Image (tube, rainbow, N blue to C red; front, side, top):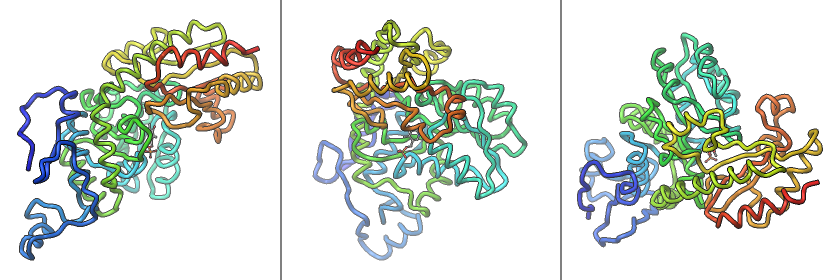
Length: 404
Ligand SMILES: *Cc1c(COP(=O)(O)O)cnc(C)c1O
């Protein structure tokens, strides 16, 4: 039983709960979970047609699965793309982009402040396959332009970044990429389609770690690539099915249900993050706050234009103090004094998380690399969840108010 055909032109909030509801003959209201590795065929002739791709129908879950398909269709509707393919994790989505958009002899340009595993994958691992990678400043379009080479095939951007919330100007990078016949891929894990739909600004590919905001409740790993049918379905989908980078049906079901509350969560978390950032900025023991929703953010105007008028769910701040040792001790004191926030590197969860990047996510960088990235020993990152704002303020004040 297929749901009533939806009218065209529905708002993303409606699509988030209504798109791609494929009901079984039982008429279940909530989306069914098809926890099966294969599908029974009615007869040999029909099986032959399905395996030859001449007839629509499911055969094997590495090829496709109804629950996974629903997640892909719903995410694509929310991103405003023709289609999406789901992957096991965010990193497998980025691997999929790298292995299909690049070949030996090609060149890719990325921001130097991207997610650590992305830097390792594109900068180190892909080098073994003859792919050259340049890392440039996140915010400086001229630096991206200067890095262009005749063999540049892909620009890979992540905006805003972790933990300093620096933005890329997606429209400017798209223009640059297209003038050179290259593709622009944007990792949208931090913003989600609620804040920004990169294809509206000209991006060709949108990458997600579904592990973050899309699930939003810290339960499963997931990933996706969104874009055109010609590129994402035909080229990347074919590789994904052969390479087995698939998202498991159970995880797809969890993220599919996560999409239903994405809008509410992101808007509420972003509003709370702005309040918290404003409060932190006025605190005497805070030296600097990094949050795109604040007027003090160097790219505030771009953020308002590109992120639907919202600052996002992640903020960072430097505690006051002198010298690396004292800054580190002060930051540890603030983080360790929390009793509500979770000390964990994950983000985009309804539970607020707090981390000290210099000793965790960015702990393996050399001191010079950390300095270049602007990640000092006094820096604390917060991914704001859905707790009551006053409780979060009290949780941070407990440490901040007792600093020496
Ligand atoms: C977490 C993250 C990834 C990797 O996703 P996984 O699901 O952990 O593989 C990629 N990009 C960004 C921006 C992330 O935050």
